Amino acid sequence: MAAVEQLQSDAARDTKVRSRDVNVYYGEIHALKHVDLDIYANEVTSLIGPSGCGKSTYLRCLNRMNDVIDGCRVTGEIALDGDDIYDKSLDVVQLRARVGMVFQKPNPFPKSLFDNIAYGPRIHGLGTHKDELDEIVQSSLERAGLWNEVKDRLDKPGTGLSGGQQQRLCIARAIAVNPEVILMDEPCSALDPIATAKIEELIDELRTNFTIVIVTHSMQQAARVSQRTAFFHLGILVEVNETEQIFTNPSDERTQGYITGRFG
Image 1: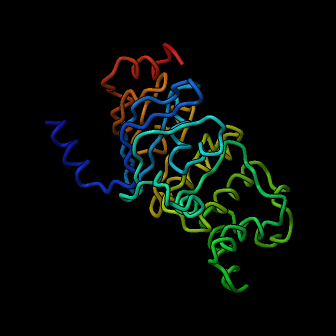
Image 2 (image 1 turned 180 degrees about the vertical axis):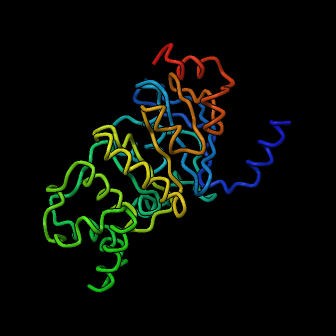
């Protein structure tokens, strides 16, 4: 009965990203093997697994960041709203406007807070007038929960913020171009517990408007922020399911072994 309910639940969801038989090779190394994974709209999907298991490699496939790695080759199909993102005619710049990225270490540009946020909209022609840019910057910082902390120093460098503030600035920068999907690669690993809690709260708020995929080394974080969790091991997607199901009743003994700390 539970399996039938799960199928009905999945059928009612809107698939935002569909991956089928995705393989990634770094030269002769087969790093990601035959991955089939659906990412649902307006949900947080966590990718968990030991170091080197392929979770970040998969994440980078979703906005073609692997394109910049020498010797990297991706096969299979990844579709965003049904469009093949590896189609040769696809504009990768436009893809990365639709699929934003927040990295492990906060990486604000060496520019003012204002220019950090305005950079993307300017490139994509979203804010042609000063008042439009002002509105985009304020809205993005508000959505990232940072506006009240920085509104009086928008002309100051982003590098002058604390680590947690810098990461929220990077999230604000990512959402300034109105992406549909936000990828986060261990966004809290360099942050203290208080800053981490703020980012997690922000992630929960953002999923109302965005689809979020997060790589995390923290199983507790995955349990707190995500609706679905995918477990990777040795380049293989072992299983994916509702987060609660993964952590309380996984179907594969490898998942059970990882979440109970027998390896990882």
